[in-house]
Amino acid sequence: MNETMRAVVARNYGSPAVLAVEDMPIPRPGVTGVTGAHGRVTAVALDDGTRLPADVVVVAIGSVPAVDWLTDSGLSLEDGVRCDSHCRAAPGVYAAGDVANWPDAATGGRVRLEQRLNATEQARVAARNLLTGPGGGVPYEPVPFGWTDQYDAKIQFHGRCPADARVECVEGDPEARKFVALYRLHGRVVGALGWNSAHALRQYRAHIGTSGEVTGGVTAG
Image 1 (tube, rainbow, N blue to C red):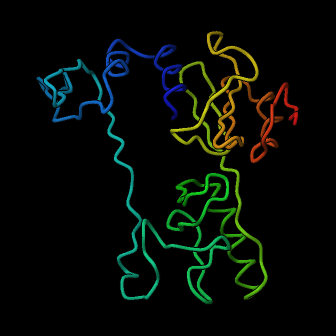
Image 2: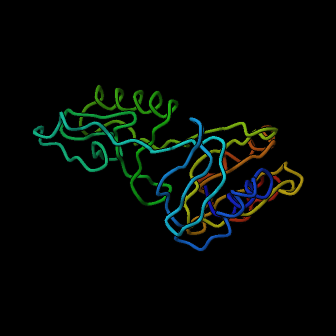
């Protein structure tokens, strides 16, 4: 999540501990351990000496693509199975799902998505391209979608939210906990976030990949 949106989350739902971490300089201190008593956690210890009181600790460690079995395959293995824009890893070999790493036209970098909808959509494109054969097929250019419910907030997102993107609120008000924000990178819209704004968000999805000013769901310029 971009720093701008992280601040909104902390401001609306952050406990004193969350706000304390948000106020720390970047790079922020790391976790060295947890302390507890009578079988319950009581605090999280940081490497700068800070102790954050805690009743529950949730650890998000991410995942690493399981590609060890492909080590001798001759495929390019770099954060997954490295593919081209058509999901092709080698002649006659295609990859899809969490393990596939392909060039992302929206951001200019490479991406690997660990998301249920992506696995389904990418598998369709990979199968189509495999059956079409060399010289045919279509590039895989998805618009990722994700969501989460946080207390009374339904947060939905289309596209991507690079850390260096510029974020602008185009509808509603963050202080009212009901708004739509667009993420721009190099002048192009690369993502759209809706906070308790499911209906309004849908009209902005079509603007992902476009440039120009967006007002009320309409792109100008």
